[in-house]
Length: 388
Image 1 (cartoon, rainbow, N blue to C red):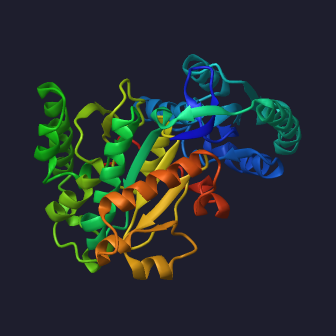
Image 2: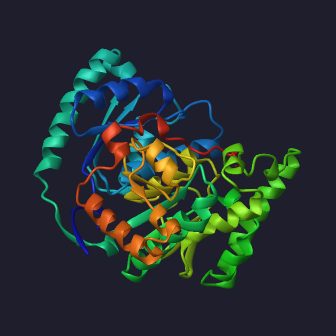
């Protein structure tokens, strides 16, 4: 299975060719939004952080922001800072340049004399960079070049019965083809973590996965909280999920059946191809952001209750096995898996349809989140105090 993609200096392949207008601090968010809105081909995102952070949180912010800049879907970056923040444009430029050889420009609002001057200068920079990007012709690539992020959110009973198992089949197929798939959400594997630990390639890796779950529960206990006070969510319960363990047993199906080759920390890029588990909170915005920062070019998002979120850097494909939801939220849902539940198709047949759709999206077909322009305000960075 082949698609036309954009080869980057680090050897990775993008399925989009964005110029990213990246704020180094929250004070530059609106300026970046306006810049991106004035230039077709530019995208931007919200950075809630960059100032007033302890060192650990600042490093998390830098890791996520530089990871989004390094994502293969990004051709080049224009950094915009305020000028007095600890997470300065110079610091971020150094981190991004160390990760990637992409084109990079930088502007500081205080040094440019304000937002209007900054916007005018950035628009010209973005125009020039987009012209360069458009001159780079895509080349034929195989699906082994893909890193697919698989997310579930707003789950109901159909998620664990059909949508996640179908995506597990897709994950297995992509791994067999030499590609990479990534799943995450630590609060939503607890109760089933022992199953995943047995699938890890080494005992040490299995212990790391178990340790991630144990640490989450221990951290919550330290602040007199319990994971089960928020899991399952009210929507999960209304959709037929009764316990955290039941939810987790459905969630882990999206990881298929292949061995887990790596367990990575939040927003960290894998070093191996195959099935990867990432330690993230269960909140979809945090989890999707981390996968894209780790290099996923495409996210497939299963849902039974409905969820409209997107991402500015990577397409997000929304799939459901809940027929009533697909009809009710047709504006936001891309694929309907309910034929598997009704007996009209097998999981394998539906999985092959998903693979074909993934190839079409990799070749340029837009998802509904892209059509609606969702994603700017839906980039959320984990902080040290975020548990679930």
